[in-house]
Length: 317
Ligand code: SAM
Image (cartoon, rainbow, N blue to C red; front, top):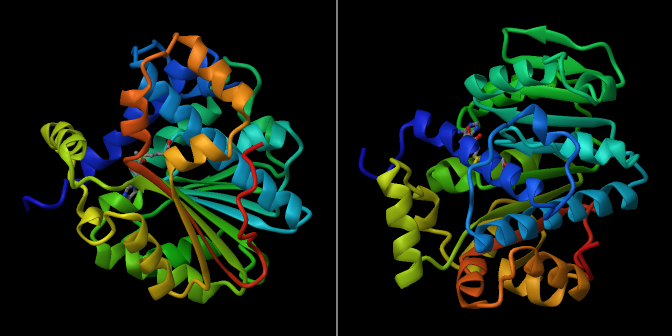
């Protein structure tokens, strides 16, 4: 239909995210010892785009680390639509451990990720970070002690639940769910059902969501038409296009406390100014207008239920 992208176009958005992250890592926007397993060949990005990715990755990483510290590692992380994300390895490299780290994406994406993880020729070996012997099933699922990669369509909750159970997830442990540019590709009916699924299955849950917002202006129009030309629609925007409506849907779907920011607010108020200067100097970004525009069109929501979350965003470490 005209308002929903085909699954293939949505899966391809992972290539774009991976290439953008790779390009930024190669310019030292942030450090990632593992991304070489998942990408090669730099596809140049504008400096504003790389700054935006830096803010996105730094924020997600910081929330994950704070969550693990707060729960003394007696917790779990579920990364929805994880694509080729390297968060598990970056955390583990810095001694941030959890009971279960579960990544979910379409089977076609997880099957490719498994092949990259198994690639023998690169160091450090990705499977050396798992605390259990890796076993594969259906070519799309990998189970390896603390790490689990499972193929599932997030719009199919019965399948999702069955797959989650196969990871020996503990529904009683505090759990952080991350979705980085994922819900926006689903209808709001599907994403609401997904939020409800998580808030009702777990006693203590936190949810970090990152995606486009405030698109009802000129800049937003250009963003959306660029995506559309690649066959990508953002049906999630129909209901959640501003900070208030973003918060609202988490409240409506079982979360007790909800905070939300544009990425610009986080960038301006919660990052270490020296880090911001370092990042802006990498490609001599002195004209800030475009960056500001870009960061005002993305948001983070941090919602939680039970005692697992922390409502304050003091600083991004
Ligand atoms: N989260 C990763 C990141 O930020 O680098 C990847 C982001 S990419 C823009 C969106 C990902 O969500 C893709 O890998 C896509 O396959 C996945 N995705 C979208 N809809 C999904 C669904 N219904 N079920 C499973 N995965 C989905």
